[in-house]
Length: 242
Image 1 (cartoon, one colour):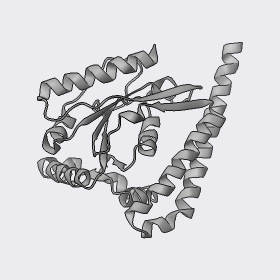
Image 2 (cartoon, helix red, strand yellow):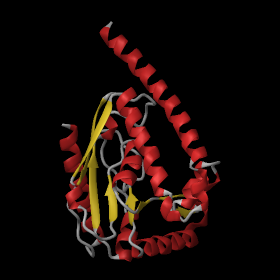
Image 3 (cartoon, one colour):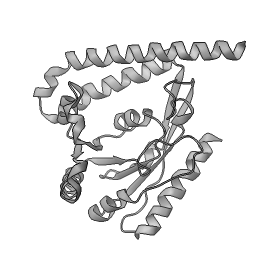
Image 4 (cartoon, helix red, strand yellow):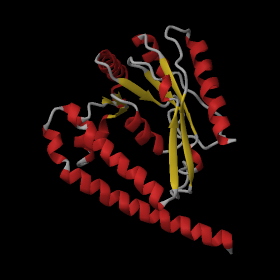
């Protein structure tokens, strides 16, 4: 009976959270629309305020708290951030806590009303997946330019969200950017999947920890850097899940 009550409470809290998130997103999208006409550097302010609202809603409604450790490991230079990916939470949190950071995303996201306009203004790097080699070369050029201008790229090496404890599957895609840009890697471990998992829309109460780890040097060989990234992130992620 107690277990059933907890499930019902979790369902209700999750539903309320998504309703609040929808209203909050529409509200922010409308009142912050003038930012679309300002220089791109200004868009980060309302974006971070929107994310802060998500943090508050998660804590208040779903009883999900979080902390971020290892900020002292971030050097004062553009980096390639390689993070474990277990939920939507880290996409918000990494952008919120890591200054001048950006993602690579599908070009089609630009066509989503309101959201697409903000995404375009935020100077993210878009890639047309149907463009094959030409599109990839353009993406790499865009990433190089943004790194030269002082921004850091956030990459999820496994390419998709993973369940906590699921066997890792690190792809080599990030290594092309790593070799072409001659930048250090900043690995990130986390346990967000214990609250906001891949295969369920329900959000469980709990405490999410994001841990920023020491940098990995540039110019390592392909197989070596892939192994180091996987071992480093998985070791720390497993500690957080223990």
